[in-house]
Image (cartoon, rainbow, N blue to C red; front, side, top):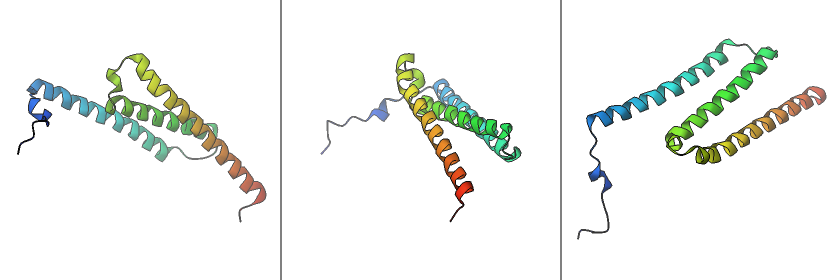
Length: 124
């Protein structure tokens, strides 16, 4: 028995070669952008030494910023927010970024407090 309430949407897709090239170009561009940002993060992690200086703190802040940029770009591309209007896009992304900055602040602050407590009182 064949069901008449099921519609096969894949039968309606008739893409031309130009549309296929555009889609592939977009996929390659997304891959390239994310790979470059990741490569920059890895290179910074490999070649900058943790000496406790201002440079290291700047690198840590840069890691956080690059990770947030990457996460925002992933959300924009894979959740198709790039195609939405600016108000809706900001409605989705701004609370996310505020939460991530808050979470990062809490993690760094508490990590510093625990490290300080271990230095002062010693580890068990």
